[in-house]
Length: 85
Length: 255
Image (cartoon, rainbow over all chains, first blue to last red):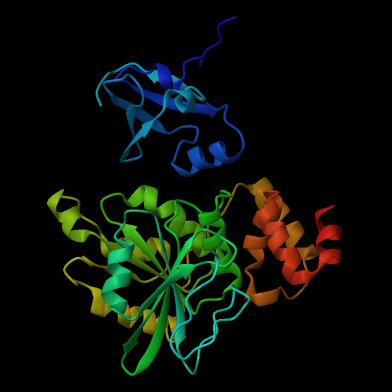
């Protein structure tokens, strides 16, 4: 069954924005993501993908950082309709 | 591995939380995110009077250096660059342990002026451990290039601690930084970090724990910080406290 919020950061196309909903990650990785500002309610923007397709660069609270797909896949987001970065 | 270089003429304590200082040198910790120019600040202040080794028992590099300001000696301890004090990487543990148990007389938090929000995560955590903090807002030349304007006074008001603007690369602001460090380390300024309040249910638990903790904590540990870490179930912190306290108190309170 598809629920609202099944979108993860990994699926965000460059140029789109979304709202962080929850983290699937646990333990040390969860802590790291929280420390980077990926808390519920944070707006994230996908900026670009590397030529290999992974990782993807995201803007998170004013800082640009690259997240690998296996990490981005653990962050649930709600898409934001407009596509302004 | 795990042995620090011995500073000239001074014995380094086996207990790495305590850095023995001869005479009247003030021990000052230097904290901050990676890539904030922390090393530049460290090098600019200490010049050639530096020693590099390891934190005992760890592969984490420790740098210590000295400078003299208005006739007083200051020993600067460069903590590993970290985004936070809460994760359990060796770097974060080292930084946290030194701040908690090493009792520096002042802590400088180097913050990247072009990335303020992310850098404040660590700054706020440090301020939860100790009030004796100076925020060094570095890379202001970069910020100017990017047309980022910082409201210095507003930041000071919001944080409740001294904020010094620097461009360590060119030496700008370092004199002021040394002055603020001296004032805080010497107890002449007593910064009062604006307290950070958590949601009511967490504050209640903190209050409960505060009543249960022994009336005096070792090494001047911040009660609120200890309560928060116990609530977090932070094993590394619990172990560290156990070393200080012995087992009985901790087992009873965390049951």
